[in-house]
Amino acid sequence: MSTNAGQLLWNRKRLTLPAGVTDVDTGLCQASKSFEASSVGEPPLGIPGIAAPVNGTLPASRVQVIPLAPVPFWTLITHSEPWFNTTTKTVWVTFTSTAETNVMVNVLFWDPSTIIGPGQADTYNRGE
Image 1 (cartoon, rainbow, N blue to C red):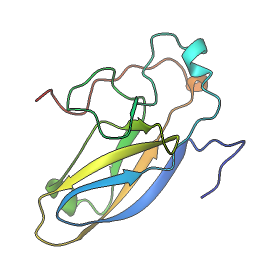
Image 2: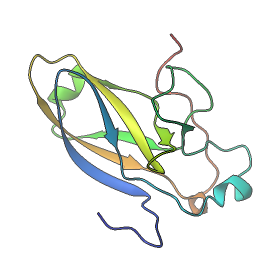
Image 3: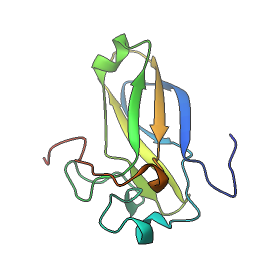
Image 4: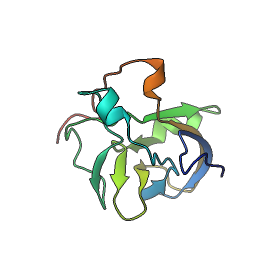
């Protein structure tokens, strides 16, 4: 995995997910968090912590979780809001698979730069 000045703003991964819950380190990191100053009120990398926040917890993350082809297994997968792991200093996502066996999916994790303009985000899931 490559980083530039300690930063990784996008990462395309192939994941093999077992049945149940799996925490995934996206590898996304942003050493310079200047967006917090240059884009006041925009979504953060994610809620800081060591576990996924409860569904619907605000603020929503700026990080995009984008399913990629082949897509059939995505109907069996849900994921949490991206969250900022305070131990690894990277963004994580928790996936839940209802498949009976391991499934392989391709996914793009993307942290849009503030250079492309201001942004907004709703949470991926409603509150429980």
